[in-house]
Length: 438
Ligand code: ATP
Ligand code: MG
Image (cartoon, rainbow, N blue to C red; front, side, top):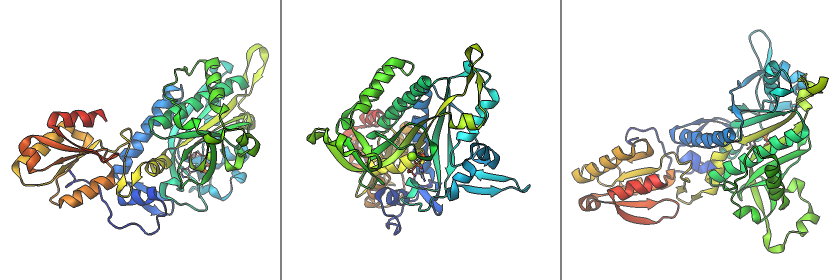
């Protein structure tokens, strides 16, 4: 992408109504544009990050054996009448009437719809277990949308739904998602702590929230420092290893972690003093095992073995994909702007041409741009160097390849690593290798 032709708008002034760093930076770096309260358009750089986050989430869902589908955003109210949630859901649900006066709604979640779809095809207990997920926009008419995409009204969620023949099976499905979540957040470079949560209106007896530590988070958290250093991605437990996964789950959850709602002072006092961590956090994921609440209410019953009947045990598993973009910025920024981790950066590098019009500088920049292709944004604008540096820092490219007449003459590129501020002078080939290496 050549910056002279790209749609990558940046703002110099700090937007007045943005209270937290990620919201300010998302607006200033041109990632999103608010179109109504809590509703955002995603601009090119923001969309690329959103897609990368989505892809990591998808890969870990697939790895855990879940299968991707895509359910619509608009749902029929009748489905929600079957489960009894149409009246319970209240004002957060956006209700719509179509031209035939039928009651519709913009889906805030999909338990009813997925149960109905599964019911259509499942013939017997042999069709269990299954886990279906989708990554789709949700709408919840939040009382107080705020903090940008962090608490929007329209937001992108990954939601998975598991169906099992037995309670033990359902607990295994739950643990599969638990592991997938730890891996997902670790790949995103985030420290996400699984905290025992209240099951609330969804019902059921097992629930965890995955919370990223951040001073601007909405939840108060208490946790054992063990969670800061564990390598989840590195665990070799296989997703189908029932006993191994149970042992893994019990091991992880043995350490204390709770939000203020679930905090237990007596258990907390058992955690060694030097390992107690208190702070604030952002909920990026939430998983539930709720049993037969929807299957029973919606008539999902299957012939079981030996003339028995099976009412599938279900769980649901959400990740706030668009919220994660905000959370990632909360965890990775400084005064000057965003510091994208390599795994989600919209582009790996920017090439800063410090003297547009100087033949050797232009040639070297073009050559590097040709080699990096879609992984780089080439700042070929005629603007001042100071402005280019400021925009590059704001937009947060992991690497800045800085090229001026002196370097071009010597065949050298100055590489700046955004995360650390470190600068090195390297050859053209080394620059490419470092940028590709992350
Ligand atoms: P919260 O407690 O933050 O309101 P929730 O418990 O209502 O969230 P869930 O129904 O558990 O949310 O949804 C799954 C995930 O979707 C949450 O963990 C969160 O990451 C994300 N999410 C929920 N509400 C919003 C929102 N208004 N804007 C952005 N993401 C959201
Ligand atoms: Mg929740």
